[in-house]
Length: 399
Image 1: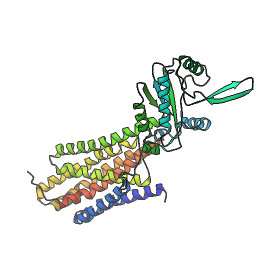
Image 2: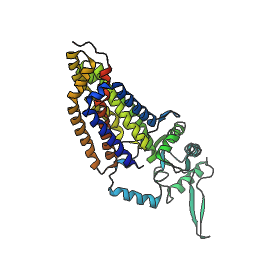
Image 3: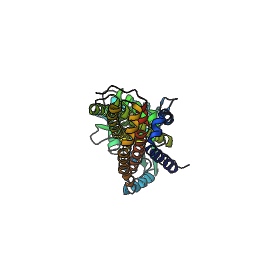
Image 4: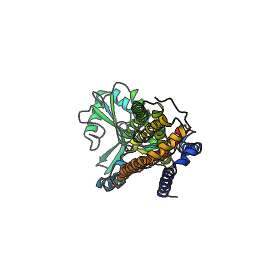
């Protein structure tokens, strides 16, 4: 079954459930425990799709690449593909070693030590530096090209070191590639075996290389390259997720508490938006869709926007409970009163996020579809789980 068919089926099921709940609010309140049991089953299924108990960890991956942010018709895509086809991959990992003079025995020995340690890492294909590169020299007498190591044994004498400097700086390839013009910076280029971004990050190669450089002595180092940037971006995404989602929960609960004066009115709406967020994350994990730099905001967005639905329902419920003093009748009347505005709010919000599907940028389309699905889930929970919880709660004292 294709992904589009699964998404269409899930959307249809959500819309049908929302319509049924809005049409028969009495069934929601009368069978409150059944409603909550069904919600619990769906939530457990989403958690099972999202969480891998063997790791333990999450099955949904993070994609730190720039691909989802580039428009489909961007001419740069074709240029990039042609460049890769002509010159090979662009996954070279570049280390710049800065010192007072590269052509000294300590500096060259440090360079070789770093090169040797990095080469031993699993996943590294090759390491190139002044002490780990090939020299090409044309021999006119023999009319042939001699291929040999640029440096076999690192010399210690000043004369030999000056000869290495002369050969490096007069070479057609090495200047500004492996050494700069004033001999204060040398490059160490690392190539990796073919692997995905996720495999590179899970292998911890960026951290391993950073640890090697930290032990390397007085020289200073700067690192760049596509894989290094993606590793840093992945770490940033993890950090933002661990901060933004809890922050969204705290802010949503605090605002709801301040607006209603009720702890219950803070917990129930935020709880329903968290469940909806879990459903969406579970669906994405099941479909193999990663979080990207754009869809990273999905969780906080659903929590903050979705909590508002429940706050309005709880505010009306408290007014009705104050009049009747009974939870079930108050929950039923509350659902009858709020179903229309909840449907209008949900429909317009889904339409707004759905408009993002017209974008030519893949990441924006993914954000639009995921947010639209999440708002449909929030709307469904606001018309089912929230009234069901209210119907089963013991009335709290109201002034």
